[in-house]
Image (cartoon, rainbow, N blue to C red; front, side, top):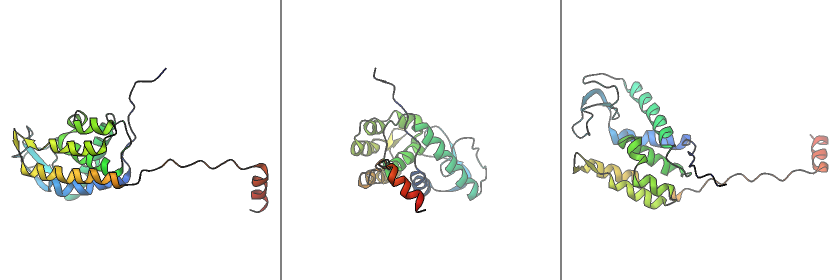
Length: 185
């Protein structure tokens, strides 16, 4: 009997998380004092690298606190989208999906056409679908257009990455090969 239940894919590699972390910082900008977000969609206060959870106007942060916060948040988002991504993705593509998720949230990312296409094995189509997310408050935002272009480029760069092939198990050694190995240690 075929198991029709979809399984979650393992968490992003350290390389994908590092890439996402270093790439998202300039996209978001650094705010050490929480401010009103004029572009956001219902969360009026933002700090650090676009953080909106548990942030109040005027709250102060150090750069180290912001760096630690974004690392934790990316790991959390990676785990959350791992429940809706059912295919292995190249590191660059997974990093781009993490950047996208950081901006739209894991629920939005999981419902997106981009994830649907990636799960169908259409990486190019999934990367192109990121460009559908360029609006805030009912209007196209040039900053989001630029951000999505960067995310799409990183996503498509995954197509150029060699796929990690599963290691080929070594053939079992014969008794004589093992004996030779023991004698000539």
